[in-house]
Image (cartoon, rainbow, N blue to C red; front, side):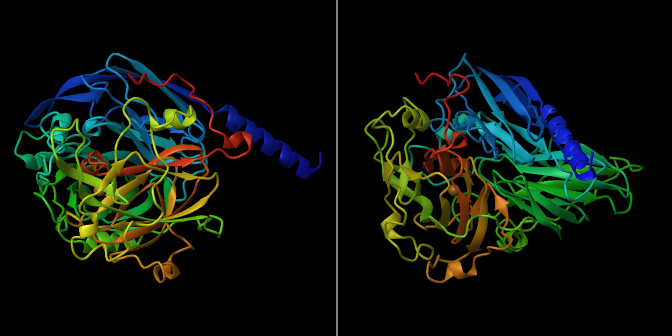
Length: 555
Ligand SMILES: [Cu+2]
């Protein structure tokens, strides 16, 4: 055989081997009410398999998961696989009322999907009510090709969150159907569910052992409901290498900023004198309304081999939660490792304004007006008797409309003063239809009605490039000239900055119904969400099939 043919044969064989190595993982999850005590705080909360965090899903790129979820808890539930594309498996995406009805108490549901074309750190979480507070876990996808940052001695999961010291769904009830001021109900910051040693209770501090000279991969995820987080390790510099499953141009920082819904992979090299060092999270970028969240960090110990955990560890100093500069500095370093790769022509140009306003209550609600999260001055009402996807797929009329306008109802300065045009919003179940493969440019602009806050926006089913961002009113005549179309970072979640905007680009290459929403749970509860509906294309791989398993009953 000639050498070229031999190489081709070997290559083909390798591809076949790689293919046949793809595995199917069968998992059985029991959702239950569990009495959890973290340090001093004890509460009956909803968990998967009795754990917080819940089980880690760990697979190789190309693998399939079949997760059988049984609901033995006190609430209806649903589970979302955050950041996973769900290409042609929209039915398994999970957001309640959008792609499925919530799973009734006593019922089971199977989520089955294959993870291709993406790898890195993802997470799963409950996607109804406030159950994400206690139902979350990592979803780790090992890449088919070795990562560019090389070998590490070990990997550690660090999932930040919040503890309410009571059932989070009860906390949620205090936030709906009311115009009461926003109060922060968080009792403690947590890492992997634990508040750590600074909360005045017998310490149950997690220890991460390291060896001097070795490098470790820390998989950071903010699963919290309502707060952005800083992550730091005392005396150590961190190298940021990947976020939301996409490689970044590596950069060094002493503080990482993570908003709810983001994951960030960092390298930690144990290059300091042998000892113990606290690492931890604290709240970042606090809005200028409501009561501030707890400012006590959740801590873990990074313990060098040869030191003792009873040596008092060095404590990191966190930036002020009210200071936007560290957030802005950090964000300016985020650049994609791969070049921008979407087609040059933008097919759909959208400018959406997002903010907190009020809406009139429905007859069934115990109020006349209530607080609302809005997009294009409209708050999203969940359909109750079917999901948007079931209505779309089965042509059930009257469930949703397709009239989210492409531009804000009134175009003006959205950021300086409370805007009288956006104080009272509309309501509806509104979507925007996209054609298969449309290249979409979406500018998300912060609108000030009841105060200026940042909004971590998450798009289901896609990654997007972040091509622009500023703390200003978006100027469509000037700002696009400054867009980064060379090496923008690619994420599935990005914060609309306080009083500013972000510009995103993505391709609608995944037929189905895809939620766009604020990942602050209180804002989502208030209706800061809408859905894109991507129509089928013409080819076999461009048409959404029916569900692989029966979706939960809607009654
Ligand atoms: Cu928000």
